[in-house]
Image: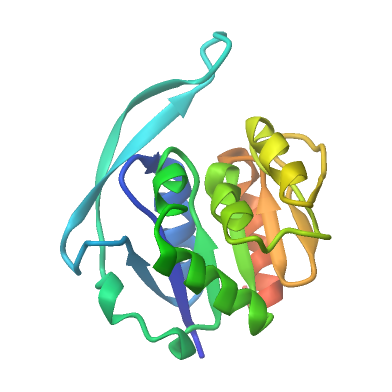
Length: 191
């Protein structure tokens, strides 16, 4: 199987949908981008988060991203991996029972899962981090520990792998994050 399911939604971090989507397609994966209550051809709005020296990142409008698959048509057995983007979308996606069922499926099957930044909020809501080591955007640390996970401190460009799960604090980590996900998928890249 060379299909990846990519769960996302409105106001996801622009880089955290655009870059992994393009990188995974570049190396030959068919990546289905989906969002609850949306169909193939619908768009989501993205947000650009920037560190401008304030207590929290600023948020600016990003791009419109066109979804290429319909959420209600997902057949989970078609996919070899799952990726969750960050930004603001996860705080709403984690309220969708079908999203949580999808995440639990990938963990039950021990298939590769990649979650970045606030995407880890979906994992904590799905109760799949108990007993695992993982990282996330630092403000998600309390949720990780309350859900029974062991939060791993690391630089912004780091990624952490625990079994079938790779996590990263944010888009600065894309090279390590996607590389680790590809290894979990068993990808072989020749240059």
